[in-house]
Length: 114
Image (tube, rainbow, N blue to C red; front, side, top):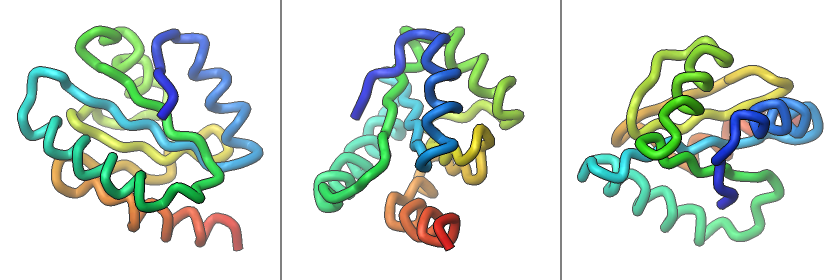
């Protein structure tokens, strides 16, 4: 996973998402539910080492302004933990808490590529 630490990276993510889907995972380091969701996501991610699209990790407590900008920029409600699937500069899927499921995200990406 790539660290999301600068607001300018959102423009990079949008540009990259015109070529391939991009996943953002927002994590609260003080929340046990968020830690559980992250661990589950990381286990699933390790099983899918063939993924051809980037995954950005945001520590939303350290980088709260970026988290706020993500909500405004992609017109979504802020949640924690939260996954976002960005395609062509738009959030086409978001999930939070135990609903975060990498297999579901991969299936959605498969539909985007058709």
